[in-house]
Each structure stands twice: as C-alpha cells, then as structure tokens.
Amino acid sequence: MATTVTINPVTRIEGHARITLHLGDDHKVHEAYFHVNEFRGFEKFCEGRLYTEMPTITPRICGICPTSHSLASAKACDAIQRLIPTPTGVLLRRLAQAGQMLASHALSFFHLSSPDLLLGFDADPASRNILGLAAKAPEIAVKGVLLRKLGQEVSERLTGKKIHVLGMVPGGMAFPLSEEDRAALLAQLPAALETCQMALGILKGYIDSHRDMVASFAMFESPYLGTVGPEGALDFYDGWLRWVDADGGVLAEVPPQRYREFIAERSMDFTYLKYPYFKPLGFEKGFYQVGPLGRVNAATRMSTPLAQAEFREFRSLNGGRPVHGAFFHHYARLIEMLYCVEELKRLLDDPGITSTDVQARGHRNALEGIGHTEAPRGTLFHHYHVDDTGVLTRVNLLIATGQNNPAMNRAVLEVAKQYVDGERITEGALNRVEHAIRCYDPCLSCSTHALGSMPIDMSLYSASGEELDRARRS
Image (cartoon, rainbow, N blue to C red; front, top):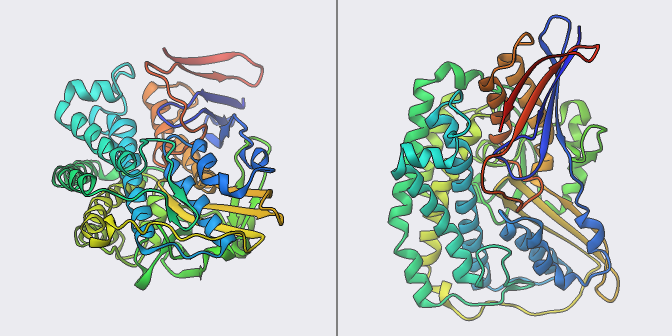
C-alpha cells in the first residue's frame, strides 16, 4: 500500500514549510517534496515606486539578511545612474556585508544546527534547541550569541540599526564611520576569531567521530555557483559568476549582468518557491547549489590567510575537487565565518574607512539596472526596469533560497530514503529529515520568529486513509 508521511511545519528554519514523503508498497521512500506554503509578492508591490526608494524598502524583505537586499538594490541603482561608488563607500558596503554574513552564519550554526550535533539527533526535542545547548554547554552558547551580536553591531554602528538597515544609497553610503566606532569594532575581533576557530574545531571533531554518517548524509553531486574575484578568490561583494561542475571544471564564468542568459526559473505545482536551473544544462540536469558550499566549491582560493588554510584542508577531503553532501554546507559556512572576521580586520585597518567621502551622486541615466551580491544563503540578484521618470515598471528578485530549492528537495529525498522506515516513525528520523533542510539555512518568510517550542506532527497513512502511525512534538 502506498503511503504518505507529512512533516508540518519544518522547525528551526526561517519561515514556514512542510515536507511530504511518499512511500511505495515496499514501505520505502520513493519521492519527497519540500513545500513552501507562503506567497509574498514583493516584486509586484514594488512596481510604481521610485527606484531610489528600493534600498530602503528591500531590507524589509528579510530580517536576517537585510544588508544583502539593500546592497543588491543599491548596486542596481548604481547601474541605473551609471555611477561608480566612492572608494570609501565600497569599503563601508563591504564592511556591512561582512558583519551581516557573520551574524547570519553564527545564528545558523550555533542556534539552529548545533543542538543536533552537540545534543544528538535523537535527543528530547524539548531541550534540543539553543536553550538546551546553553544548559549543557553554556560557554559555547554564550560565545555563539556574542559572535552574532558583533555582526549586528557592525550594522548598528554603520547605519544606526541592527536590522532593516538604512544608509546604503546609489553611489555608496549615506553615513561615514567614526573613529570611535572603528576602534570599538576592532576591539571585539580577537574574541570573535577565537570563537570561529572553536566552532571549526567542534565541527571537524564531529566529522571525525561520525565519518560514516557525514559521508552518507544527503550525499549527491551537482554543479555549484559562487562569485569570484581576481584569481578565483571567493568574493561576497563583487566579481564574476562562476559555475563549476561536480569535478570542479568551469561551466561558465560571466559578469552578473548576463545572469538571465544562464539562469531560468520554472514553477512547480507543489510549492510557491520556483525551480531555477542552469540553462546550458537544461531543466533535468541544470540544478545547481549556491550558498557557503556553492561559493567554497566554485572558488579557487580565499583571500585571507586563516580562511585559506581551512579552505585547503576542506578541499583536501575530496582530493582538491568540490566537496559534495549537504552536511558540508556547515563546514563551508564556518570557513566563511572565519573569513568574515579576517575581512572585518582588513577593512577596519584601511585608513580610508573613516573618510567622509562616502557617496558619489548622479541621476537616472539608464532604464535598467542589475544589482548582484552574495547573501548568507547564496547569490542574490535585484533586476529593475524604470521609465523616464525613474518609476519602476518591472522588478525581478532572484533569491538564493529559491536557487537551492531543487537541491533541498533532493537532500530531503536522500535522507528520507536512508532514515525513514515505512513501518514506524521515529522522532530521530523526523529530525534528520528536517536537518537536511537546516544544512541550507533557508530563509522563507523572513523575520518571522516565535519564542518557545514549535509544534510538529508527522502522520503515516495507508492508501485507504487509515492512520498507521503518528509522531507528535508539542
């Protein structure tokens, strides 16, 4: 008898989603689907606004990565005005971006994923969370909170706000950085560096002691996309789009303004989240991954010394080729976290960082602008069309989580095949399927949070509708 297992909602992610697992007569998982249940519509309700409003409006898309949206928006406005931002404006934009990456990656690892690793996938769900982690390992929990706090403080000292940032404008930034704020941020970097190295030690220790589990967890090969700068160095802010295949061969390396030539989007009937794919490979073979694993696999090197050392060790896991498997998003995320701290130090030490020459000024000189950057979850595009008065006529936002949608569905399927037994549901199996999604740290509804426990039900039904088994979490 064919049966269906439903996990609703998926917990410890940003937003609301459910998973359905379809089992055959042999009680084995044959299909799996990751359903995003909400529709937002930002692209449509931005139409009719002035393009210059967008760097202020778009941070409201996301409470976790508002800087990325504001930055991509400001860069699209740069293109519409045909402006080159001032050198200090670029330094400050990069500073804000590194701070946001640090905050988001710290949240993902310490708050959302580490309870599974440090407390166990089969631990009591009532305590398998950041509060349970704080009770068992308070030093780790506190260091994680402080690391995220530093990332948010970068935004606050630059723009006056920790979330929904202000101050990114066409041509650069609206506000300079004071010497006092520069010194205050520099003083926190040694502790932040220590925390990043501690986190890497924890994760590498987990991998060493759970080699079989890690090697098989959502293990599949795919192409990867990331932004690279000179000599193929990973770059969050600017550079060229590089797709590599599963062996590391470059499939394409192009300016971001050509993204529509290489990325297509298709709607699916089981989710509001589209299925983007790499056009040259077609819909069936063109699913690619973005985010930490996509960037680290697409890059040739890291531009800071400590991150470069970790990068070499990471890539050695597969003989220098791209490293596959959803679990390794965690590893790549921590390498990027270390890179962020080193990048903050480099930027804050630059003598131009406190210059007051923060913005170039101009007016509308084009009818179209494409802004691109790397968000915590992957490559992000803002594409604007305007009329002669600067009013938006069309907006396209290509979000990183959407680009990872096909990979998340594949990860759910692979983990479900390995851990879900059609005869009986275990809480640990339920949690492992959810963790496949947490590896990608998706952002679905953005900035929707609740304090307390998240209820979850998973039911197993026969083809005739009879409930065979049920697991509840309250």
